[in-house]
Image (cartoon, rainbow, N blue to C red; front, side, top):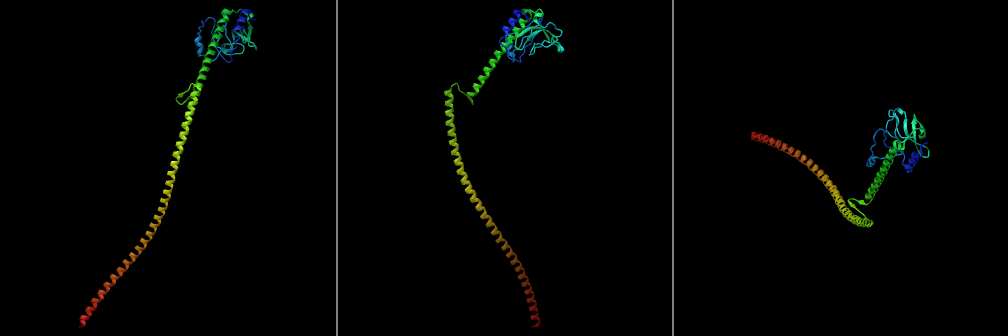
Length: 259
């Protein structure tokens, strides 16, 4: 088990348990960690566990994940270094991992100030920043919803009285609009009735004209037939007159010879 100072501090800092599924980047002890509290504003997740210094830099990958036992990834699946072990009760204990088998901190020499404190503080600060960002985002979402609920068209209302007054005005305008539309529809229906009556009259007149045209056409056909017959009779009369004239001349010649 870890020393009382290390484990007690870890337990007290992590008493406010964060949400699962979160992550934060971790580096080795030999590298300088520069953490700005404002950088936490870019995080979209909070920290689940804290990572401490790895003892074997040749196998440590340097990324952080949300494992149930520890946080950290080692190259090619080989895990060898110092991390944080978490039991079923969510109690964290600094431990040394050797090929996936954790050894409690009592078996190794761990220093809270040198090996654990920096990474735990970074995780806590990142979690606090993420919580603040989440609260800000939630408040902005609430403000946006309220703004959407209190905005109609291009008008914004801040009090219930303004909304009620707008609704009353809108209702009056709606009633007036419906009344005006009803009046216009009545006028349109009246004009449509007149147009239908005129259309019926025109249809009847069209039928009458067609009947007259048919009758006139029949009359013209009869007249044309009579005209053709009269022309034939006229030609026959003229032919008879010529024949009669010829006979008359012959008769005159015979009379003159006999005298």
